[in-house]
Image (tube, rainbow, N blue to C red):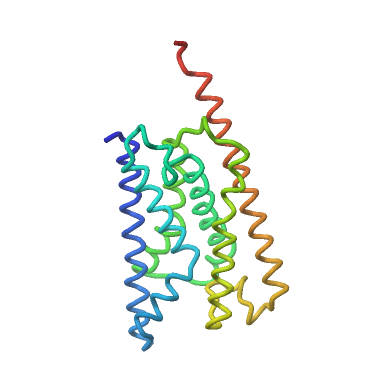
Length: 217
């Protein structure tokens, strides 16, 4: 196994451990508060952070497992890897700009917080940069980065309409109302477009630089 695949496997393992740690913390807190485990699990699966880290673990696992000649498959191809990179980096951007000041986690919760919001985004971005070949990256791949956040927004709003709980304050319809939440959602989608464009531009630049230093055959 190459060093790049070993790195992807190590990152996938770390991400899986972080997700399990956060699940354990949620279940423990639910038990203390007298909330059922199923309710705690339902809320756990409502967070963009959790779902996106799960997506990153799957993408890293696909990369680590795929033989060199089969990396054009969906989960380990440049399009899917880039879309995942956009989503996991956005986890860090949104958290550190909009959410981190709202609480001060301690102990194991601080560990889980740092792993899910800082370490995994940084490690996946590094994996994308050093391991994923960018020669096939095109501007036409940008729209592929958008279905996931759009589907998550629909999922979140449907969940909230069903039980009145929203995982993030900037999408809390109960407090902000539908028009303000719609504006916030459009702003976040625009941020996804900008970040996707930035990563594609960087990836295409990297591909050009790599092609220029390839030895003549």
